[in-house]
Amino acid sequence: MYSPSILYLEPNRTIVSPGNTFTVGISIQSYSARTVLFNFTFDSSKLEYVGGETFNIFDFVDTVLYSDNYIRYLGISGTPVNAQTKTEIAEITFKVMDTAERGDVRCSHSNRK
Image 1 (spheres, helix red, strand yellow):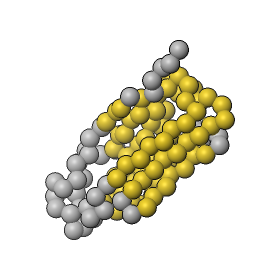
Image 2 (spheres, rainbow, N blue to C red):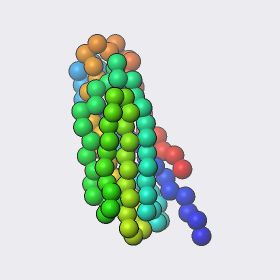
Image 3 (cartoon, one colour):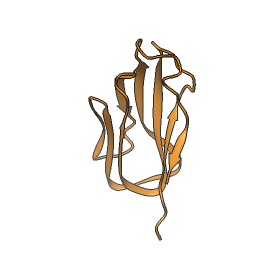
């Protein structure tokens, strides 16, 4: 029986100003995941990518890749990963550019099936 996975994006702050840093946690909830691929873009005139961290949930590939204004998380496991409860798989850190206007960057929670 197929059970959909849920992907969560959760910033650690909802209000940010120029010069602030914040992180976006990437989590999944799935009964049996072997692969997660997640891509997103951001406005590099307003945000600077600071870094990415993974939590070794997937045993074959577990990485965050960054290029210009594009971020990709890829997790691949040889055996199914049991994440029946929400499980954080990566965290991305951004800095709001000093040239950004107050209110240019807004953070909110999101989850997708």
